Length: 107
Image 1 (cartoon, one colour):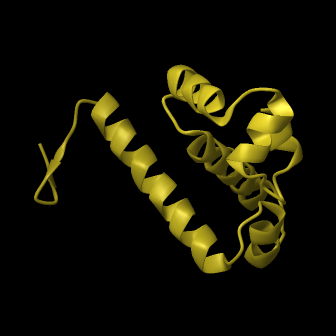
Image 2 (spheres, one colour):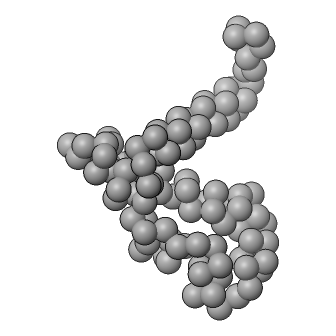
């Protein structure tokens, strides 16, 4: 995870993360799946999105700069990933609260 944190702006491919960690790609994938319930790259993307969220909340940097700082190639890709993460978080929070949405209405 330190490798990921130190390469937020220039994300490393999973194969390189495995090599630098001294394990096979399959071992790395299994470890992340077992511990976090996510693939290596899903975890990495979440880490980058958390950094982006922190910058959006606590800095005056333009979104284009935050996009670059967090390693997203385009603002469109960043926006899509960020929106998807927010939807996922909202669904998780609703489930924790015991609420489900059916046909746009809460039960």
